[in-house]
Amino acid sequence: MTEPSVPRSALAVMAHPDDVEFMCGGLIARWARAGVQIHYCLLTDGTSGSRDPDLAPEALAAQRRQEQQAAGELLGVAGYFFLGHPDGRLVPSVALRLEIARVIRQVRPEAVVTSDPRFFYNSWYINHPDHRAAGEATLAAIMPLANTLLAAPELRAEGLAPHDVGEVYLAAPAEPTRFVPLEPEDLERKVAAMRAHTSQVAQFPDFERLLRQMAHDTAAQARGAGVVCAAAESYVQITLARDAGLETGAAGI
Image (cartoon, rainbow, N blue to C red; front, side):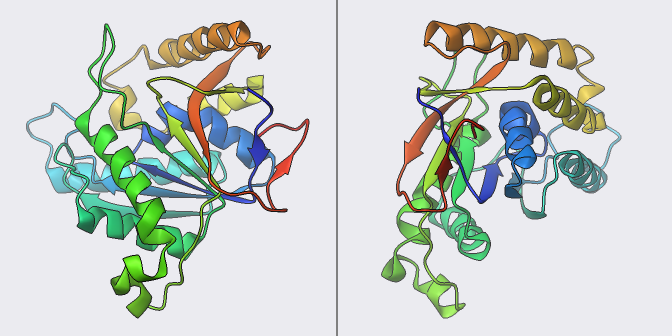
């Protein structure tokens, strides 16, 4: 539970528009304050995110893309990749792994954030299979497809050189190994960014209370692990490499 590193660049890979804000918006806000260059990669089109039978899937996909960009602007996101897979039918195929590895080789992030594929359910929630698929495919993309020259001849043919990711953060973890303290401004920016997903929060008017309660409940877990804070997010942190670009200090993540 030592103080984590501050990467120079990060890539968040999640299944749906709004997953980044909901699962790791505080971490993204904290990194943004530290000047980290952040990119998003959203794997699905988000077209299952409505119960309105009169809403065309194409219209909802366009709306959710716009909402994601509006939310990202509040968090200082530098760029977006929308892969457009059907919402609710994501599988961690080799083709999906290659798509994610392509983005990793293009962005060349020091850190990657994705969802924990080991989290299936708890006593009150069944984790969306797209979330698990996103995490599984991203881990397989990081190693070996993104970082091994001969593992992805397709990417080599495109002129994309291998890239080693140094740190991986798995959000919504089954068993957290890292608690990230959130300053009040981090939590407020997370809530504000989530609010930008108007098509989703309109269906869940209690979302703000839920986000704050989750942050405070996680902080209670963090304090039990010796991390003193009033709000927090939890992760599994995987350290794959260290170099001079990953700075550790009192500033936190």
